[in-house]
Length: 539
Image 1: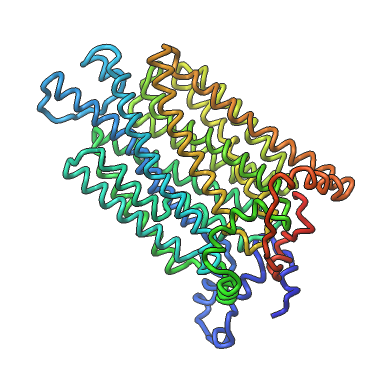
Image 2 (image 1 turned 45 degrees about the vertical axis):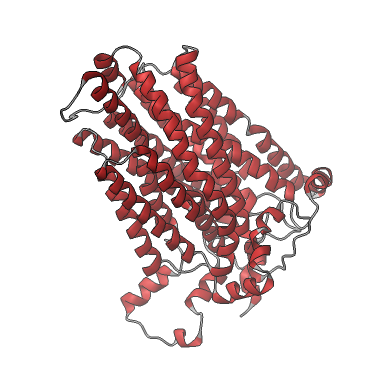
């Protein structure tokens, strides 16, 4: 194969990867397919529709279940108090919220229920995320060796088992405290961070550097689109059935099955058999498992970019997860006191706004060649302003307005991923994204613990309005700005005066972190991708 082929630029995908997948062997070239089938196979191997549906279906099921958990805990504790305090023996043909609890059981009852549900939500969230660190560290390097598709299938099977066990628990009326154990098993198999590692590495495999930010943004938008659909359906279902919870779990089960079918029947493997074989021969699994961490101490790459990138990603996800974790309890509390249907509509609208910004505004910025650091700064500055706006919300229309405008804040994440991905060679994409996903897990765990305890403390102990917590979220957004400013200054100075400034930054920062040199011979894919050690200036 002509190795110079990797240097050809295409609008969206790597021509080398596509040619390998479509013309892998001489025998395959000689197969004469009917024209409709041939056109379908040609489209399949163009990678135009690739791993995006995988993340869409997975996120839909996962966020559907997560939104169920929060309201399941809240309603279960409320119903328990009804039975204990009022000797309630009838059916519950209504959902619990602040007005219902305080009207029937006295003032401040909703605060007690909020505190109990917050505590169990923390345990459940941490139990599902911490075990994922083990799987995430292994999944990136492992997918570099065996391919991306097998791990997608494994995570999908774990989702089927998780939803089936949760359905059984709800029908059998088992104690809610069992759920953290079920989630821990699912997290150990990979869960959400494991899937993020694999799909983002897949996207980097098949996308040219020119369009990497856009393609990562489209992939990121699948999280928000899937989440919007999940929350919309969840709110409608709970409102129509008076908070009967097993139903949405069946949708999670179905989405996991569909995802596996799509991966097996349609999705091409992004790595050729030769690439996988070569990587298995070059390094043992033990070395590959720590390769992601070694990248951050490497003299081969601009490791300072990786450190700043993962730091910005940690803070960015900390505020995003915190915002998501407290939003349901905030909307259930005064002054809004929404019902599940309205909560589902709002959260679906907010996530849809994130996806819309990534689908509409991000392509425009990429076409205009706006630098990644500028996109990053713009996104997190907008997110800070949106959180400040939520803090002042008093009525329903204000919440929908601020939440809708806040969608632009999603632009920061694909920009960070793009900066980091362009810094390393293609054979290190899986290892890199495993570290990024691990940072996201740690960030999510820390945010879940902090915010679920912080909201009850602010409202119960201090007596402050619940909205005040969003000032803290806005401050977290602002903490990402210095990272973006450093990226921007170095990028602009490097373009105007050559790589001299970047070398100076490297000389100052990297002695603090660089102690290990990673051996990573360049391939024709590396030349195509533009991620050589010598050419690591941020685009």
